[in-house]
Length: 168
Image (tube, rainbow, N blue to C red; front, side, top):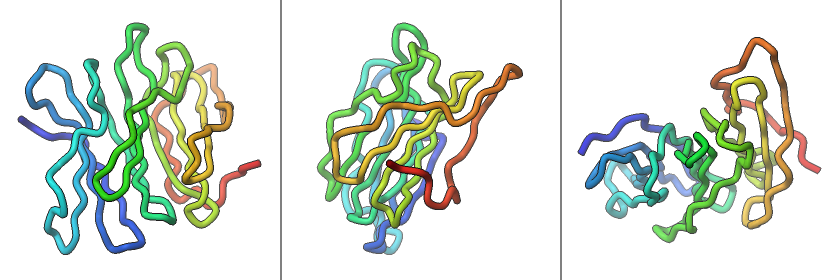
């Protein structure tokens, strides 16, 4: 097996969270997570995407309650959508698709705003930059909205350092 595309986030509890894409038993990549304290793994790596398609390009953030939120690019029949899962203390949600833009969602990014109380996910469809938000701890995402668009195309934006993004 070979892991690539690592991403790292720190929790308020001092744990570091690392996610990466890895090919283990099949030809498809899955997204894995491990929590580290003092450079030692607190649990074995866990598969958080666990799908049949390719799971690529993960991003990770930790909210104010030390819940870990992971997004990635998930292969679907029409192309790619954005996969999402959250977990805490080695217990993970079922992965879900949150982009719903007919297979054109790529290059996911994730951040928290409002003191870690709002989770914001962004992605690119080649011409538009999309974003979706939810309250940390809530299962309900607000409707996706376009942040920017360009006739010349768009690629790989980043929400890090975004400050307090609008929510409401």
